[in-house]
Length: 270
Ligand SMILES: C[S@@+](CC[C@H](N)C(=O)[O-])C[C@H]1O[C@@H](n2cnc3c(N)ncnc32)[C@H](O)[C@@H]1O
Image (tube, rainbow, N blue to C red; front, side):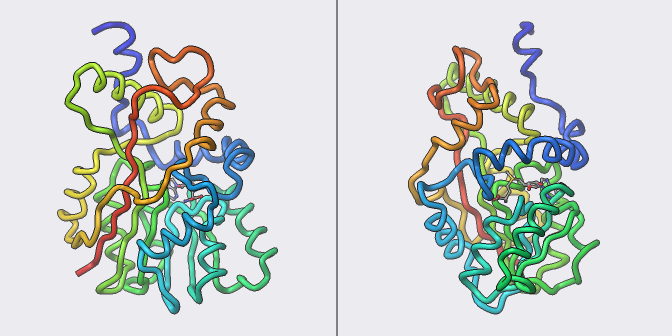
């Protein structure tokens, strides 16, 4: 095996733990806020409200629901949803620092006190923080991609969801190609982002299988149906001097093979 391939070999799952993800976000949250504002999602639209309204519709979010925002960041999305709908959103983030920032924003948006709350914790262990069978929806917005144990997360969701409750996942997955050369380039780019963003990019088929194994019914699983505004994600990569492609010359400018695809998935606890 060449030196380069050894260097970029996919890290074993055991090396990525929630503790490592926590350390990463304690250190990197300020950098995220500088470029992404209060919503840390690389797949975004030019105006965030249109993305959020799209998510409300896809997740079947409705007035009166009890909801968990699993991997809530600094609660930008949760604050928007709670300002539009009469919902009770419990945000959960692995990062104490994000929790602190989110709490300040919730306090500032006075009308939302009692509608959005946030705490630190691990979304593999939802049952440790929340009552059994008491939620209508658990959603993950570019957050589940940090897990190396999706079956455990799904079991945890099942414990806190009511019968008929839903899981909504908006996330990034491995792009699949039959072209050998492009596949190698994609493999290297995915290995690089896994390493530099503390991720474990999955194949969409593995996600679907894990959902079926966990006993969920798949109500929807499709590529996102809205235009993708790439500039913000590209700027974050360039500003932080992150190398994505093996052949990248200088700062990342968004060119090169498409290595990630974005899907939304809606599951139902039957
Ligand atoms: C890319 S950010 C997305 C944040 C937020 N969903 C948003 O749209 O702004 C990923 C989030 O997942 C959270 N996260 C990652 N692993 C987690 C875990 N095991 N338990 C709870 N939160 C986790 C991180 O703390 C971070 O807030």
